[in-house]
Image (cartoon, rainbow, N blue to C red; front, side):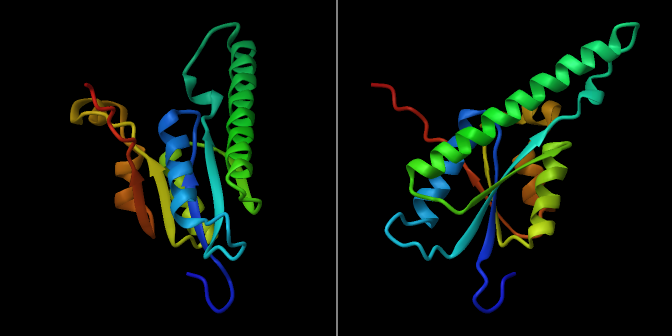
Length: 162
C-alpha cells in the first residue's frame, strides 16, 4: 500500500482479447478522470507473454518452429502494448506503464501485484462456463484467490437481443 503522497498502484491484466481491452477502458473511465491530472492511482498494464518452450514440440525442426512461435508471441505483445497506449492516450491518460512479462498469466499478474505493491488488480472475464473454466483454467478465478490485493473482475455487458 502507498503511504503519504505516493500514489497507489492499480495493475490491469491485458491481452489481445476484447474482454481485457474492455476491462482496461472500464477501469480508466471509473478511476482516472480526464479532467484531473491528480489521479489517485498509478496505472500499470501487464501482459503475460507465454513461453514458446511450453508448446511441447519435439523433433528435428523444433528449434526453428519455436523461433517462429517466439516471434509471433513478441509481435502479439507489441500489438497489445501499442493498443494499451492508444486507449490510454485517447482517454487522456499519459502516465501508464506497460509491462510484458514471460510466463503464465495467473502467476505473472499475482507477481506484478507483489512487485508493485498494488492496491487493486483489474482483470477482464471471458465469461466461460464452469466446465470450460475447469478445463482451461481461469485467470480471474486464480487471481481472485491468490493476489495479495483487491481484485476487480470486469465483465463485458451482455448484448440485449430485441
